[in-house]
Length: 93
Image (cartoon, rainbow, N blue to C red; front, side, top):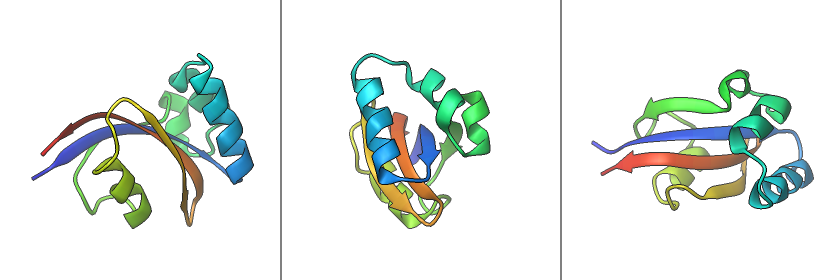
């Protein structure tokens, strides 16, 4: 079964998500941005979600994690929780 490791940043608005993505694309460290801005408890650990399999996260999140490019910052991804930036750190098929 496929597994993935990812980290994310959760914020309330799409605009905030875009702004943070711009900072990361401009050289800011994903972990530091997550610690400062993420509304998810995982933000304290740089947004690290550990390893998980398909179906363990909400559908919109799963679709990105199990199809997106590893190592790139993806998003904004809208879920019922808010807007996410997602960085897939590894994935197995």
